[in-house]
Image (cartoon, one colour):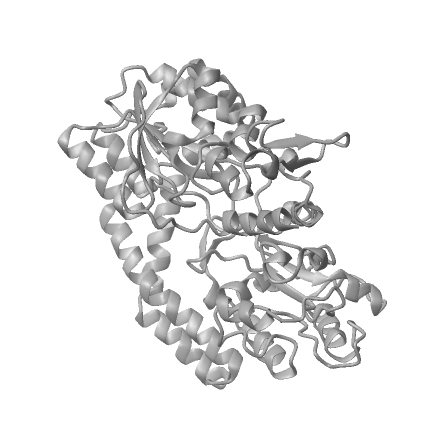
Length: 514
C-alpha cells in the first residue's frame, strides 16, 4: 500500500513538473562526452550514479561526464558561462531551451543544426517525423533548421472536466450534452443527496480560480490559450474576452456560484488551500464522496485512488452542434536535447539519443529495466519491484528512471504507461483519451523572430492576463455587478492596456508561420 500511494504521488509530481531545489552541479563522472543539463525532479537524482546512463552506455557504447543542475536559473547561467568561456559541453540534456534560446544559440554557432543528421543518425526519430509531419513542423525553425530534439507523446494528459459517474448512475442521470443540461446535473448533485449520507454536503463542481474555470469555455465554443487568444477557421487571431460568448461564460459562473453549484471558495482559495480543506482525519473506507466533479489532470489529485475510478471525463458540451475542447498539452515539447559545436562525434551522440525514441528506450527512460525495476504479468500489466531491489520507490526513481517530466527527450511509451498495476491511473489515462477527437490547438507553434516584438508581447501579457482573471473572479463573486455598463468598462480597460496591439502582434507572428 505504501508503494501504491507513493506511485500516485510520483504521478502527480510528474504532471506538475516541479523544479528541484539543488543549486550546484553534481560531481562529474568519467566519460568521453560532456553532458550539461537540468534535472527538475529532485537533487537526489544524480546522473553520475544513474543506472539509466550506465544501461544506455552498455547499449550504445556512449558515456558521459556530467554537469547537472537542479535549479533552472543556475543551469542557464552556467550554460551561458560555458559558452562564453569556451568550456562547452558536447550535449545539452533536459536542455530546457526556449524557442528564443534555440534560435539565438543556433545563430551564434553554439549549438548545431540537427536537420542534416536525422535521416542517417536517427532512423527511429526520422521514421516518426516522416509519419507525423505536423510534429516535424513544430520543431523546425523558419529557415528549415532543427536546433533541438523533442519529447514526443501522442497521448498527452489534458486538464479535463471530470464528473462523478457513480452519482450520475445513482440519480438515474445521463451524461449532459449542453451547458443547460450540465447545469441541471449540477443542481441534482446539490439537491438529491447522491452520496446517500442524508446530508447536503455535496460540492457539485470544485475548481480553483479563473485558469481552471476557463476550461469550461468550450461549452460556448471557445478554446483560448493562456494568452486568451485563439485562431479561427479563417486564420484570424481572436481575443476571447471580446467575444459575446465570453460574457455568457462569466454570467454562468456568477449564477453557478450564487446557486451553490460551484465551490463557494472557488475564487478565494489556492490549490493548497483546497487540498487542505478536503483533507479529513476520517480515513475509513466508508468516508462518503463529496465532490461531484473537478477540473484537473486527474481526480486523484483531490480524491483517493479508490474514489478516482468513479469519475469520468465530461464529454465536451455541444455549442451550436459543435464540440470542441482546449488542448493544453500537445504531442511535442521542444528544446529537450541539443548538440553543441564542441562535439567532435555528432553521429555517436545522436545515435545514443535515437534509442530514446524506440519503445524499448521509452520504457527504459520511464520505468527502468524489466525484471529489475518492474515486472510484467500475463495480461501485460507492469508493476514496480521497488521493495525487492532498492528498498523504496523513491530510490528506484532516483537510480533507474530519467523521464516523467516534460524536459526529457524521447517518446513516451503511451500504451505501456496505460497498463500499470494502478487501476486508477490506467482509468484516468484512458478517460483522457476520450477527449482526443475534440481537442483544438488554440494557437499554432510559432518562433520568436523579432526580439522587440517578443518583449512588447510579454509586457502586455503581464498587464492583460491579471486584468482578465481579476475581472472574471470579481464578476463571478458579485464583487462587481455584471451589467452592460460594467462589462463595457472592462472591455475599455483592456483596450487601454493595449489589447488591439496585442492581437495585431500575434497576428504578425501567425502570418510569418503560415
